[in-house]
Image (cartoon, rainbow over all chains, first blue to last red; front, side, top):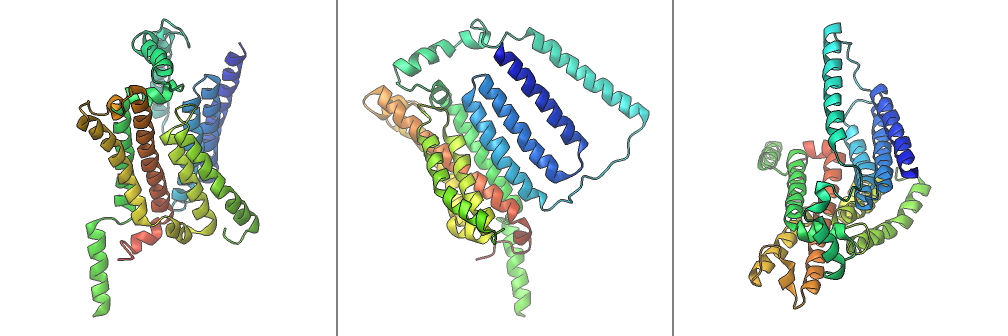
Length: 194
Length: 147
């Protein structure tokens, strides 16, 4: 029961932070609030016994991405641009779409098995084999690591390649790692020399 | 920020322990929460802290751009290399059982190497992202400098 009420408290906190993010116009405050949002989600994952996910969320969401956002923010104005409110029709249409999508999600969530239900489809397929084998046969107590790096090693390979490609993309776009950027530089140097 | 003595001293004290903690998370992932993704981010955080306090130039001297790009690629190569090594030893791609005589030892070796590859790539990407964003205005006008 304590877990349930802690989760409710954390969820209320998340909604509160979300409200602040929507309300505030100062980008610096928004970035810091987003870091706080990640930290609260990490606390929620710990509460749900998903420590590995919580660890990642705290390190990536609350840590690195806050710093990256701050670094990127240096090229933006300090204030968010205020847009004039739309017509009554667009407001109502947006409201209907939001409420409709929310209702669909709630309806789908009702059908989900309860948290920790041993008879949930996700728990009865291959999970029992992983849980039994990892400790006794492979002698690796952390099943999350076994699943991530061994049983689902191919997926993780794909993930690593995705991270690699994303990093490469940013390098090409922002750091001038392209051939055109270099040749432009060479051309301008040549002009300077003449 | 490089004139604030409190920040400088704190950064100097924290730099090494953060890296040690990152290595602990990296190689203790079999037994506790953690692994390559988290460790990569933590180790990158140490270098980013250094660059934030002592300046981008100092950060680039510590991890030059070429080393950074090499880290990105090396991580993926290590991961893929472990997979190919499994194939070379008459196993399937990413089959760790054949890496040692004992399947359990093979799994340990495979997982540690693979997590190391993930950690390298993530550290490299995070550092590259930070330097790309933080040094964007300079690089735009001085593209491919240093050549």
